[in-house]
Length: 385
Ligand SMILES: Cc1cc2nc3c(=O)[nH]c(=O)nc-3n(C[C@H](O)[C@H](O)[C@H](O)COP(=O)(O)OP(=O)(O)OC[C@H]3O[C@@H](n4cnc5c(N)ncnc54)[C@H](O)[C@@H]3O)c2cc1C
Image (cartoon, rainbow, N blue to C red; front, side, top):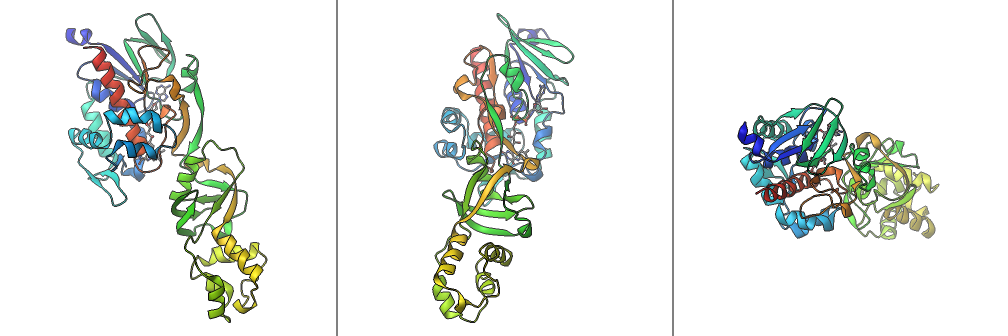
């Protein structure tokens, strides 16, 4: 107990992946207190569809940073200290062995987020967790005070890891700038009524220099390619136009017409793209779907080709029901990337998704948590030697 009193005190607001990971790195050398109004690591359970996609198998950190539409430059320094290989090592130390899926996403061998939660909680069993809501942070001369809905605490250092959906007002009151948070990695809502296409998926669609699968939904479009686009365009104002190449390969439509003069246009095109999409396109062009190919003139052919290669929709919103991460958060100009310490308030650190950092789907957002947690914890440990 006496020894505990001599240790520097570190408060951590938020027991999500970032906060718990920082607590793990600090627990042996500091008197750590976690503050979370909810159950620790509750937020890791739904990750990766319950399998926890904890990292991505890109081992060159200079390449890894390129998967973050926001934070690329900042993470260069962070990942130079802790990136994919270190994450795999961290999980091995926690007793979680991992495997790399074909698409390079890394999962625990057990495919269980619950196992990841349990492994951290076993390690943190001696770290006190205050089940309280932090309301205010007050920097004092040598300490940082945290006022919760039940009590007040004083720490030598304070880490804020409240994620992408909370804690902003508390931080803004300290004069720290917040970039307004917007949903990212979400489906998009279209002005056009795409309900007749709901449930139809297309593979290898191209848009904005990227390629991937899409899925039509009741509200618009979704799927891996759309998530990426929603991430890149997270700060764009609605409405914006999105053009999709539904069949990026070159195909000589006129030659196909010549070879199949008596075939119905919808039957011919459904050899390339799903019939429901073909019918939607033909309807929007006012071309009868049962028209024989020999009756299609050059103008109609060009319109059809343009609608396939340049399928344009008006994006009017994101599908808020399925938000995965937020673009926005603490302005990175406010934070030192070498320590994650606030440039304005000594002893105050920000880690995880509360920062204006977000990556694509693939384990990048949890990697941000592990890496920023490590760098902040390591700096606190080094400063207290
Ligand atoms: C459905 C879903 C699936 C996902 N899958 C993946 C995936 O497979 N791979 C990946 O890399 N990323 C994934 N993500 C994103 C990833 O889960 C987040 O980026 C990550 O959880 C952020 O961690 P964090 O610790 O920064 O914040 P959070 O996980 O949001 O944790 C913040 C914690 O702070 C607490 N808190 C907030 N405010 C206060 C307060 N005032 N006082 C006390 N406590 C407070 C909250 O209760 C919470 O426990 C997924 C996200 C979702 C929603």
